[in-house]
Length: 26
Image (cartoon, rainbow, N blue to C red; front, side, top):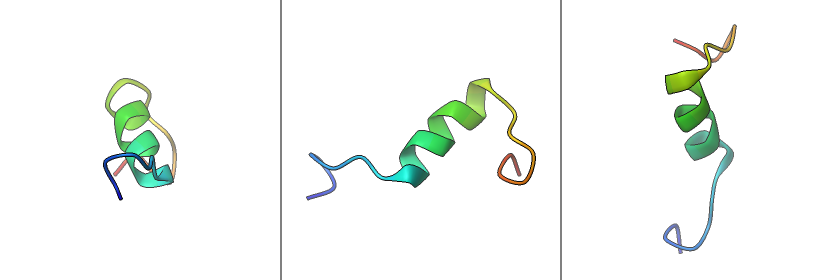
């Protein structure tokens, strides 16, 4: 199911690699 479903974690991880997010950029 995860193949067709995008979780907030996946988005945060992808964004976090390029954009440092305070509180979630550990």
